[in-house]
Length: 152
Image (cartoon, rainbow, N blue to C red; front, side):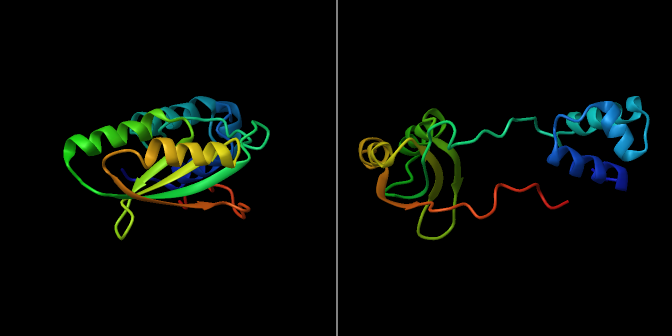
């Protein structure tokens, strides 16, 4: 899809504040509210805008431990991988998961209430899985940059 400068300015504004009304977007983009609304709908329909979310405070929700967990698989048999990936989609502590090149097969972003909860996730859920060979975790000490908008 080709983007004109107005589309890019709209996407930038919506990444900063997804709650902007059509009137506010119109003011920012020098468009009428109806034109701004139609542009937003076009970007949504094209799949460029995938959805809108509220960013919550992990600390205020009692999630004191953030960690990245690398998982190395013992097997890539489709049936074993399927049951492992089911864990990734059903465990709420696992907020993101990526497949990787290199030594680790998966990288998981995890939020837990405390170290005991992280320990339980690793030792009672991940490590016992028959497809998992090794798990390595890194606990986040401080997040220096929050998840940022995409560079458009």
